[in-house]
Amino acid sequence: MLNDISTSHEVLGPPIIPGWIIVLASILILSLGYLIYWFSKRKRSPQAPPPPFTLKEALHELTGIEKQTLSSNEQATEISLLMRRFLMIHFEDPALYETHEEYLKRGHGLEHLPKASHQQLSDYLSELASIKYHGPTDDPSQIHSLFEQTESLMLALDSTVPKDITAK
Image 1 (cartoon, rainbow, N blue to C red):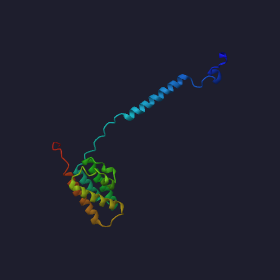
Image 2 (tube, rainbow, N blue to C red):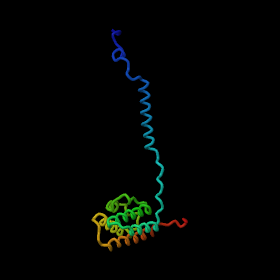
Image 3 (cartoon, rainbow, N blue to C red):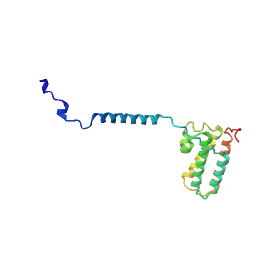
Image 4 (tube, rainbow, N blue to C red):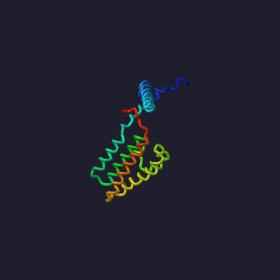
């Protein structure tokens, strides 16, 4: 009776893949999984700080935008990007990557800025957005006013940023 029991080799035949290949493949798959885990959890090197962007440079760029022959929409877009970059660098604020509505709705969006400038910046960003998205305007005084507002807002905001008096 016990002699009637057949082995797996007799029933199934020899294995198609040798056992050592299965063990080796398992070790390789586990090692690869560990490497992927290790690389994903490894601390990334800190990003380089943004390049210095002084008020003088920002005002120079603003003048350059004003001298370009762009439509009012394009000028407003360029001014918006300039102002957002200014806010990002001077106040470490992610305004560059948000719409003006997202920026204003974000609870802590204006906390880095002086309280006196909150409403001024809110009105300014709304006016900028209306020019950007509602078609070109034929009123040159509106665009000129926008450049003046941008300059005065940058001057006001820059005056609140602590300066490093030891820098040369």
